[in-house]
Length: 173
Image (cartoon, rainbow, N blue to C red; front, side, top):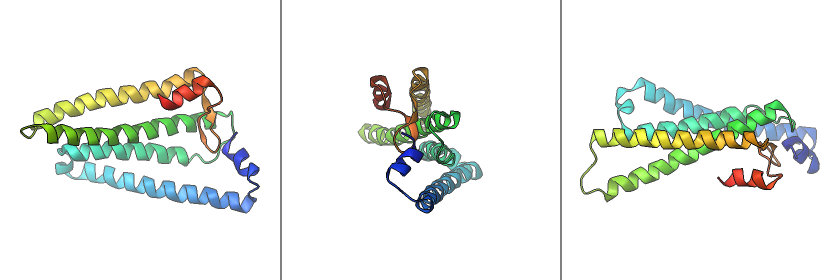
């Protein structure tokens, strides 16, 4: 069921549907502005580009920006290329934000459990490992549902459908 069909199921008027879309665009715009602010600061200030913690925050912001872009695609009809594209973008953006937020938690644990503070070289090696692991995971988890035609309407938005067992597997991988 597409988001459009779900809205029709709840008997929203055209005016109410338009208001819901406006709210979605406003919220996505605010998220996009916040992510762009972080990107701007990263590229404008040299000390941010050298800071391990800010690099992790930058990656979370990239995930939020990707998600916002997907939301800007609106409310595409089910079984369209636009719905599939929105599903792919939603999966990629959400996984990016979740994985990098998790990496922040793991990095805090890594730093706290050490007897001495990590050097810049230690942080650089850790960041390289995190990039390799996280982006590989995101790529795999974004491509696999496409191999089984699992992207489509997910009952309110376009994402992984959930219409079959394999769809549900992709939702939890």
